Figure 1 (cartoon, rainbow, N blue to C red):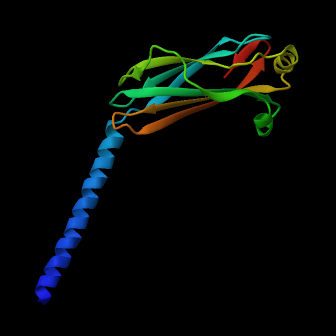
Figure 2 (tube, helix red, strand yellow):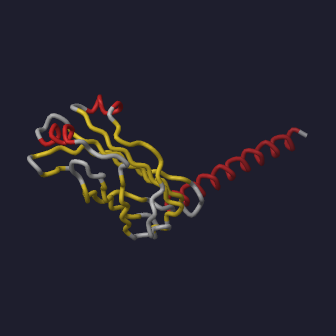
Figure 3 (cartoon, rainbow, N blue to C red):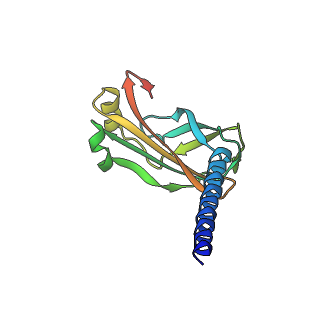
Length: 168
């Protein structure tokens, strides 16, 4: 009877170890095979007094499988230091942009136009050009991998001025 109990205990332990190993291998395979969307660069398409800021953000999927169900969120803020930006949002909210990119394939690049739903007034732009304040652009890209798991790529950039040139 004692040997039977030992055999059952060993079998139970072996079964749990096998289950853990299978789960570990499944998770490792999912991580290896999933989409990984990274930011290549960004460029201001429009930026000035009384214009609606539009930032083109260039992404690449460096993963092995496509990214899909793509949604975005954009914010623009300003301040004289990074600690004050939370109270100076021009725009904050979830937006799904109309793009031709329903899917970003493996190894493919995509560009998203981040449109901020506000205008920059002359006083703030003058302070920016004079170097008194900086702008902060935040962008979040949410996408799903082939396993229907959600992932998020965040971009947060401080934009400073040098005369009339922007530096990101």
